[in-house]
Amino acid sequence: MTRATTPRVAVVIVTYFSADVLGGCLDSLTDQGVTLTDVVVADNGSTDATLKVATQERELPVRVVELGRNAGYSAAINAGIATLDLSTVDAVMILNPDCRPRPGAIGVLAAALRPDRGITVPLLLNQDGSLQPSLRRPPTVTRALAESLLGARATKLGSLSEMIVDPAAYTQAGPVTWATGAAMLISAEAVARLGDWDESFLLYSEETEYCLRAADHGLATWFEPAAVIEHTGGELLRNPFLSKLAVVNRVELFRRRHGRVRSAAYFAAVAAGEGLRALAGRATARAAFTALMLPSRRVRELPSREQA
Image (cartoon, rainbow, N blue to C red; front, side):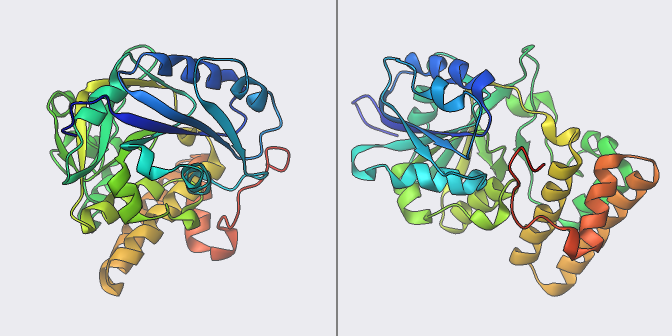
């Protein structure tokens, strides 16, 4: 973003039973090198103390948008953005509530925006300061097959894995196909051009779809390692419900963007991997494989925490 004035940024934070982490996220926004025009907490029907934390007195322009139900990540983002006047901001920062931008991180992301860079993403670190791999290569049949047969070992064999794990790749700024959606800055121009996030995905693959759609419009996703954000995350690896949602969405997104033959091959590759891991006793893989093979077991809407 080439402008002499301080960038004007609105922040949209999606919450769902986030009382334990939201306060830290909000507190981290006070020294970001930007003018925060809005901080919108878009809440998916939390019944814990999330809304109380959100409305505590702070020197931030915080307001709450209540969706009243667990509508999903994209729906909450759309609801938050819908409250903004895009003519008064230069960019919109999307954040998970378990993110902690280090001082100046959002300003660095804003400075990296260009007319042909619609999205900038930060370096994500775990709470202990270790690298959290967040960058991804394009999804392909070959990569799906490699990951199915080799599992985590595929990440160590050149570009055979969709996930980029080489620490050296996280030291240089540059374009990426897509990145984890926990933290990303989107130019106001890109927000207007791309329209709503796709709510059909509920959770997972929505950021992939959005970054790929941006590329379709000639807008790159740019990785900026000088912007550092701490992110907790990690529930996907342990939760069968989330695992099946993520796997089914991954296959569905590929189907929407490719022909019948390649889509069938991709489905077969992913299903084979989940089936092998299910046979090995992994509960998350068993849930994912069942959802792939039985459409009736797929997630159509997100339950409330009381229903889950």
